[in-house]
Amino acid sequence: MIDILLVDDEVYVTSSLAKTIPWAAMGIRHVYQAASASEALALLEETPVDIVVTDIAMPEMDGLALLQVIGERWPHIKSILLTGHSDFQYARKAVQLQAFDYILKPLNDEEFVQILSGAIDALKDEWAQAEKMHQLQYSRKSDFKVLRANLLMDLVLGRQLSPKTLQEKLLQYEIPLVADKPTVLMLVQLGRQFSHLDYNSIALMEFAVGNIAEESFDGEFRVWHGKAPHEYLILLIQPLSDAPPSVQYSTDGRNKRQALLAERAKTFRTNVSSYLKGDISIVVTEWFQFPDALSAAYRSGLGTMFMIAQEDQHTIHYLEERAGRDRIHVKSLESLYKPPTLITLLESKRWEAVREKIGEVLGDLTKTGYSREHLYEVYLALTNAYLYIAHRQGHYVTQIEELGIDFILDQTVVLSPERLKAWSDGVLVKLEMELAQKDESTKSFIVKQVHEIVANNLSQDTTVKTIADRVFLHPVYLSKVFKAETGESLSDWIIGYKMERALYLLKHTNKKIYEITSELGYQNPQYFSKTFKKYYGATPQEFRDH
Image 1 (cartoon, rainbow, N blue to C red):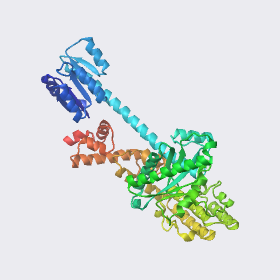
Image 2: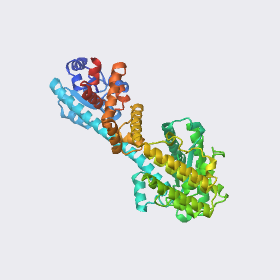
Image 3: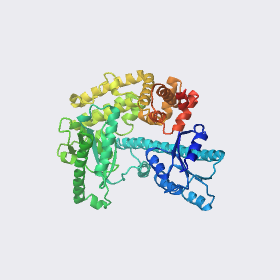
Image 4: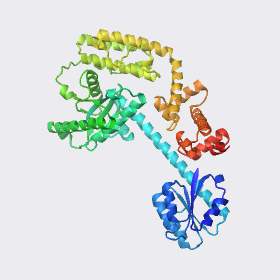
């Protein structure tokens, strides 16, 4: 709805207009009146107004001066000038001040309504454009979030991209990193203070940690943050310095870079503790060249993160300082990551090929020698693959009874390749059986997720695309699944759900219509009113009045 302010020191003019013009029929909700420019400005300070109709000739501050102040402070307001003067200078000044129109007194109601209708139409067009732009910006940000996450997942899992493709993606997704630059990877785990939070709250907290990281390293480093495949937060950090490689990779250059990184990392932990009231554990890898050595750095950081479970967690662990530990290079481990990968085989449900690949890797480990760290790496790679395929099928592993994946590692699993293989075989059998039995129930679970997301997020953006992002499905596929299960398109169901909620709020609460509009996630009150009328044959106000 639209609110209008009438300003004239001749009070009978505004009173007459307030009584004679069919405001409600024109979609105007409130008609305010002011007898001076100062009174008008005081009202505008307290009350949102969309259109101002003001006389020019007024004492103290005239209408042109009022129009100038309105243009500076409330540029969204449409202004219409009233005057008894036909002098062209007034009209030119009004144009300069971007008045919508200029009407001569004495007023003709028909002419006034026609000009006012034009102002209302112009407002609605601007609102529609603003809403469209808002949706485009939100969609773009939402797309970027998913695209960045997918790219990060691909890179840490070892997918090779051509330099040109990588550069295009970094620019397109607005990722601040530069290829072939010294880079360090930080894995971040939230402390026990956050353990009581649900999944959505954890995601929000991780987003906050990522933003704090950007602020903490700002000015000296570039930061790209995202979620790791194994439920940790990843920070990829590059120095801003454009020094030549000979300087960057020199001993002095590395020492200065490491000292500055350590200083900022401490600031980062302190800021998280201060703002979020909780601790974090950080594992910092050695410096590497992005993106070629990213996958190897991630695996080394991940292994350390998992192995510090019994150590002092709430601190910063630098892999360079842990380099004195024995390292055994087992070439056969590389077979775990070469194509076809475990994830590829699981996606195509080639169960026997999965078993053969795992048997080959563990068999080679037995022949060539291994350390506990290598067994951790295999365990984590297998766990990642099993979690990934379960999530792709719409399951949480905790929903698959006795699957055998424990988020707190059973230490006996990595005592030997034989124990690891026995565990892996058992998980694979249960996973294969469960996914075969629950293909149909997965669809029902997806529909249930959609219902819960819409019900709990009515005041937010609940389009098909945003819901699809929340359940990690393509919007087209999600729509097909929803319609197949319910017989109704997802977009129609969302609108219907909101309209039912609107009907209830209008009947059973005293909330104002603009409050209901906001509660249901509509940015444009006119669009909400139009949608409601389409469903129930009356506008929200008409429905409440009757």
